[in-house]
Amino acid sequence: MIEGYLNISTSYFSTWKRRYFILKNDNILYHYKEKGGELKGRIHLAVSQTKNDLSDDRRFEIDSGLTSISVKAENKEERDSWINKTKLSQQKHEAFEKDFLKKTSEIFQTNEGNSISEEVEIFQSKLEVICMYTRILEEYNKKISEIALEKNSEEEILLLTKKSKV
Image 1 (tube, one colour):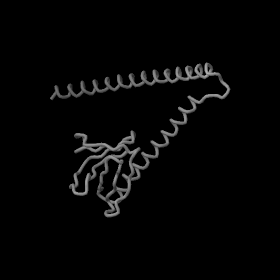
Image 2 (cartoon, rainbow, N blue to C red; image 1 turned 120 degrees about the vertical axis):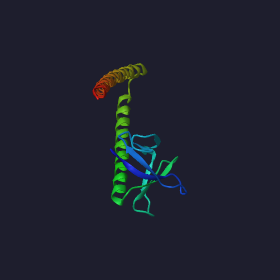
Image 3 (cartoon, one colour; image 1 turned 90 degrees about the vertical axis):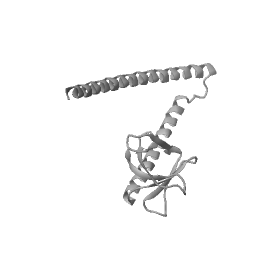
Image 4 (tube, rainbow, N blue to C red; image 1 turned 45 degrees about the vertical axis):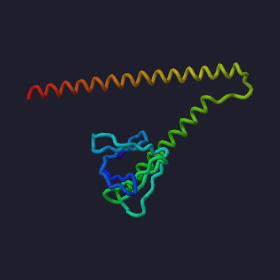
């Protein structure tokens, strides 16, 4: 969704450190020492609050209840963009959770007047449908992984071929 360099401070007395941040669609904000470098930390935005820091229009704070970080952008516009993206990610995650819970409750909803054996039978048939979808998703993920491995292998072969020509 968004990525780039920001400065981070993990406590009031610590110095600012430049880190590379990536906000992915999984609603987790990752920060690395540098782009492509070692993962230094992550904050799950579903349980976090993001707010402006009134002392500096380039700063904002992300507080998960367990971890709190102050982040400083290059300018106010960049700060606003990061805040908007984090809040949008949180809203999308909340909507997904509500939809998932609604669909799950519909699957397991019982009908009044059914006997226990009828409810068990209905539950078993719904469970079979869930298992079928799970198998389909597993097969899909397996195919995607195979394609990715083939693509990586092809790219490695091309890279090795180019190196051997040099």
